[in-house]
Image 1 (cartoon, rainbow, N blue to C red):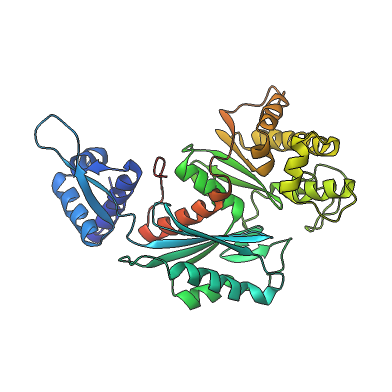
Image 2 (spheres, one colour):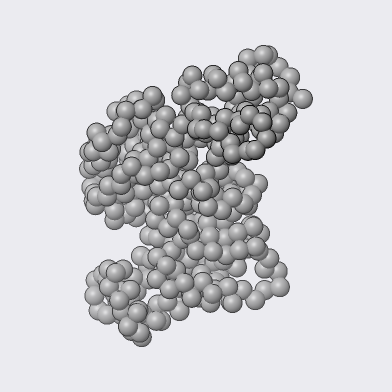
Length: 384
């Protein structure tokens, strides 16, 4: 039984009601009262307050043959809007979204090479999105930025593939837009997005293979980031003693062998080129190019090690792999599964990402919406 001041209890009950409405997609007042064990009068008062605040809305009647049809409630997805950004090393992708992740607009630009260009580029990008946003009761409720590196307390602690250490993007953007700004590791945003929109498991491991290798972890329904935000830096676990040098300072780190950047660099070297675009690699792989096939064999080998280690360290319900190589040839995932021969491996599913490149952006939407509404759990499955 919750005890405390009337205001505190009402706030807790209001949060629970709001969370129940969001996670039920649509639900009646009577169903909320039954689910939460609160009186119908209490629910009616809280619901009316949330309607007055334009956070929820009535959406019609429930289809029933028994008596008066109850009115259904749903989140007001257009109460405000969010801007979510994936700050990748080559491209910056930004999303303007309502509160339930339904896309309004996506804009992409090249990632600047010079540190002093980052803030102006982000401002231009955000301004372009804001000018096309519809009027809403709360306007811009937050900006989320996915960083391909380690973040701690909204600051960039480690980002090996672009130079933005001297920038306080959080403070600069907060001052400029007068809204909440969140900097988070891209793999963490990715797992948040996958859990909220697709895979509602209590324990989720999301392996992101992009410029590096990241691991987003949800343990007992909570994002796990560790003591200083470094949890999940799977790419910097050592798989080759005295192997290739890594920007983290170690040698033989996983991401120097299995990241998209590392594998494309290795393939370009085989072809005596300085670089090789992913799209062209795809074409070469589909035509059966021997070097491309060997690169994919290497991907399977190191990903098998990677997945095996995650299974034994965390024993998650599900492992999600977010990699363009998997999308190119999903038979690679079957090969990875077949390589897991340890008698200790126990898992429900190993699956490719359902959201793919959108997972980071939708994870950013979730972070902003949860903070804005003050809810802990956000289940938006079947929304998109």
